[in-house]
Image (cartoon, rainbow, N blue to C red; front, side):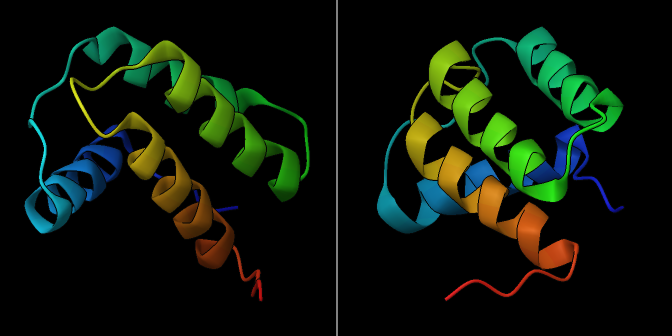
Length: 87
């Protein structure tokens, strides 16, 4: 299974902020590290792991702005990286 790194999550966030506006910045890097580790160590399937990414980024607010946008895009990227084609 392919996992997104913290750096990939941050890059996704930065691209979304550049594209749609908002304030760049990480409010809590340790939360991002925790989220990435939690997803990787989970014994769940890809759908639960994707949901975990979505939920954890939205609720812990690791970024200054754009947490919901980032959570959705990262969750989708995780599914796509693991061969899931959603409609």
